[in-house]
Image 1 (cartoon, rainbow, N blue to C red):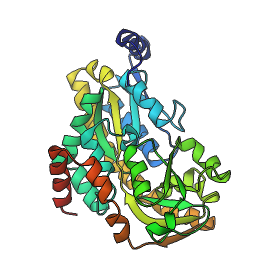
Image 2: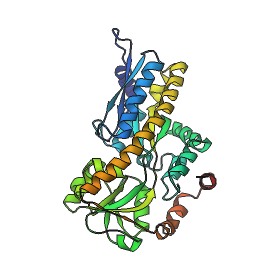
Image 3: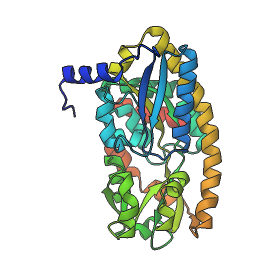
Image 4: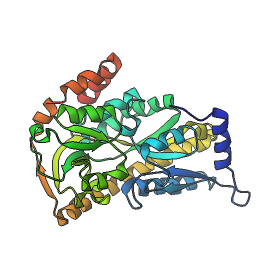
Length: 326
């Protein structure tokens, strides 16, 4: 997974964190694949302002949106080596690198938005955040990523049988690949930025994502059928490079954690508003939105759970998530 020599990485970090004598301020570069104005982008901007206030101007954050620093999979390693300081990233992009976080990628592990929040706002969420330390990043907080559903260019999906033979883009995640396969479809991992042209040219039939992504990426223009199976509620996570974190004072580390936690409430408000706005926008484009009976989709996921939840510790984590109210 790692390709850069550690000393070279440290040199890059030293350069990226040089403090201007005039401003006495460290500017942290933060990556996001979503466009400017997207709830996660705006939440990280707000986080930066809060961090600036809490550190008396010692730190500020510059957000590079729209995948300016690379696709999610590409930016993970850059963050691990401190080339990128902060990263807002979908947990799905980490694949199975963090076993505890893998559980949050399981289809239908979260029953509702309330259940999602109750799990991640409590001790289970803290446990999962702490698990990221093992991959050279410090996970600060979870942001909402909404529920993900399938959409395509040819027909409404009402049952797993409708997906037979269809090609769907997924993130580079073995769980996502196996999820689509369990439903009878063919999964095609590809960067988010290539989905529009992939659907337009017939390389893929569709993809799966939430309303805001379906809207802001323009996918509703080329894939008019959005089917609310709501198979995933994958958290977004804001991480900081462990190299960068270890170079901060304990006081500034505390300020960063506090600023991130406060930004969560801001992001959730922005997310809720954006979901309503995006649903209206895709309907105005002529998208057809249909509901489905979720039980056949849930039943089809047994092989996925059997494959990825074999370790007793993960089985216990799944049981505790399922036992959480919400």
